[in-house]
Image (cartoon, rainbow, N blue to C red):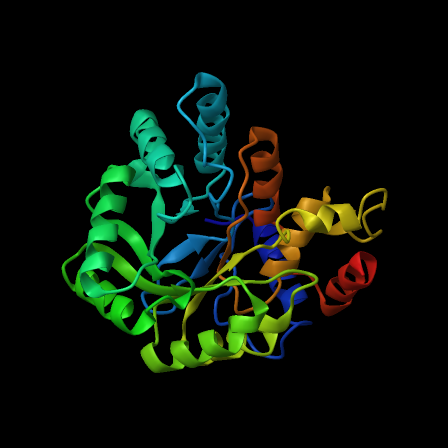
Length: 308
C-alpha cells in the first residue's frame, strides 16, 4: 500500500503535467516514488514500458576486445538495474546486434530486455532473410518490436512484419524515421497501416514532430519511441559553459542530458526515449531522467530559449 508521502508525490507529478495539456495524457506516468523509473502505456496492448530506453547506433558498434566490451557490459548492467528494458538496434548498425546479443546472453539478461530491431531492405525475401540474420546475431528466436527502417519499401516490409507478428516472431509492429523532412510521409504511412509503434527524431531544437507525427500517434493510439534527443551530441556544444536553469534542481534535474531527455518525455505523445551511450557513467546519468515530474510549458520554453 502506498504511503501518504508517496501518494502526494505522485499527485504532484500528475498535477504538473496538466499545465502542458488540458486533458489526461494518453500515456500517463505510473504512480511511482521519486527516483524510481517511470513507465508509460503502449496503447495497443496496455503493457507499460520504462520511459528511458537505449539506442545502439555508434555506441555498440565495437569489436571483440575486452577494452571495447567491458564498458558495454557495465552499461547494460546499469541499464537493467535502473529499471530500463527497451533496447533499439538495427542490422545496419555495424556490429551492434551481434554485440548486444552476445552481452545479453553472457549476462543472462535477454529475458529482461524489450528488444527492438528493424528491417531495412527491399523485397519480401530480402526482408525475411535480413530478419533471420538479425535473430542469429541477437541470439534469440524472437524480438519484442520489429520496425520498418526509415520507411524503406514500407508497403512490402510492413506486411512481412505483420506476418512475423502472427507467427509470434515479434509482439509489436513499427515504423521509423530520423529526419524532419520525412515527418509528413511518416504521419501519412502511420495513418494507412496503424502500427503499434512509431519511432521519430525529437529534441529541444527539432520539434517538427509536434505538428506532424505526434498528433497522429495520439489520435490512433500508437506508441512513440524518440531518437536523436541529443541531436547526435550536438546539443551539448550549444550549452557548453551554461548553467542549468534555476528551476532544474526543483524537478530533480542535475545535468543537461537529463534536461534534454525530460524535455522529450514532457510531450504526452512520447512513450520512451532511447539515447545511445557506450559509457557507464553516462548511462547512469541518462537513467535519472526517468523519474520526476512532467516539465511545465514554461520550463519547456526555458530550455528552448536557453539552447537557442
